[in-house]
Length: 474
Image 1: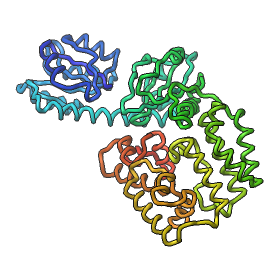
Image 2: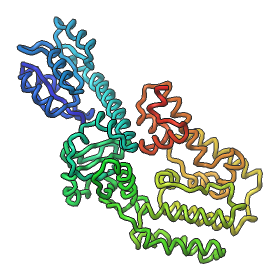
Image 3: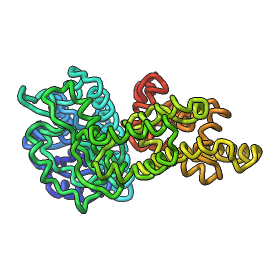
Image 4: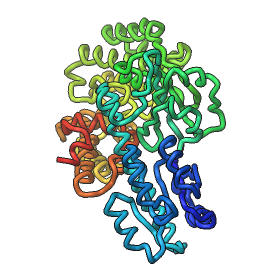
């Protein structure tokens, strides 16, 4: 929510401003109402609201003077001025001095909806830009830039400890955001349904008592503890890995603490590697079929899934390179795995299909002509639906192709893997939108089919060499 205060020397005017707009519908919360400019100024300095709606002419201190005072104090709140027709020239002057907007008394109710919608768009873009800058500074552990962007680390004592908490929501608005003390918490939106919190030691004790049942929270992951800001990038990754536990079981919901379980599943995964090398296909198929249950019994997490994938891929390529060299069998991190596969069951299904493919290399049912036609239809479908979730398993079934064979077709016909093709398509479109529209970076990511800004930022930089924000400025 964006915090709003209303300042006017007439109580009836405050009531009129409060009732003229549907504040909560557009993400605003009125946190203060003042007839005294002095009290309003004290509140602004202490609470740093997002928006100040103020009359332009008041006794003792004008709205313009209040704006100058807050700017001098270093408060970055936006101002909207209310003026009568006689003060129209003052309102125009306020715009020149940096006010966001103004409206005239009496308020035209018919214009109120479009006015507040415009304010909501402005604040969404402003918050998105700030979030992007802070996230980049966190990942690069640039303390100077962090201090410039947020006072959160400036007020830290030498005894502070940090944890990262990532929350995934089922809806665009995450419920219960006021769980933490603002001074002890840094909140960063990583997409419409994903929020990162950096928590200081004062907030760590509150986590175990949080209620997740009955909320719109899909999953939350909490990192280990560190007393140094240079570990923040590691903590963020840990919290994301912990929250990704739902990749293994979508029905599981709650707060997951980061812990490594590799020692419990490593012998099991290593045995799969031996079966591949010795071509024990029947045993392999049985083992892969039990993967989901075995991982669940050992309470394994996303880190173990990454190890499983990369270990099996490495052994498969070493043992059957000629058969699999054109397939999409590369080493992936956890974000790439979640982007490629809908869930752990889907990942296991792909590995199972790889094994079937190796055993049945010469048993293709369809003719080459049919296969080429189906593949062309698939590519056309992808070109027209890149903004939706695309999984190779679903597309293969839709176009009557073996999903493993599809990997070969992409490499053979297009010179790139399925993931590379879809990613390139999305990033090229994102470049167009960044250059030719006013959409925020987060809006662009959603428009091209990537829900997670954190992932979008990484893949865009990998593809283009710079972040989306920097690309827009070029």
